[in-house]
Image (cartoon, rainbow, N blue to C red):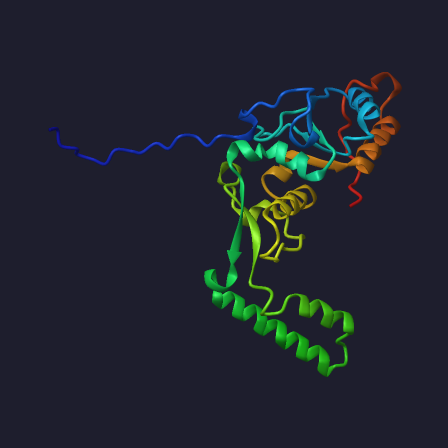
Length: 241
């Protein structure tokens, strides 16, 4: 047997990107979602007029310098719910995304102890100054040491994205361990729609019905008459939510 003189490099297979899992175009998908290619604002307006009664939420892929991972340029997903949009864009079932309970009491007890110690100090300080309100106390009791033991999070995210990067950080944690799994999944999918972080939030633009209509109105106001329907405007209207 030949002796190895140096360690052989182990080459890991490339991670599958969601965009590598094709979506059928123009047909109903799970949850009532629909994948379409809309190459101009005019096509977007026509599609929206025909479907705005049912497909109230959307995700649009945008061109990126590093290549797209979820949706290609001018590719859209529409659905009746935020959860269905996100589930489709992520290829949730195909990639095996799951919800898992992060038990703070066992995974990081020191961090948890410090959190409640600082919280108690802040509460006491505000009480001494007469600045602690009934509303403050109500919010405090919602996250007591007895009830706030951990939170739900997504695992097996696309391309091994860490949960800590997945959302923007402005969302409220889903901290009820006893919720049904289906409800947990829907809540985390909705949070992804509203607070998507890196990297999907850089590439994919999520919009509700109001924002879609604002965008169409913005395009009509900003585009020259001869160019309407030909190109998307460079600038986008500010998000309202």
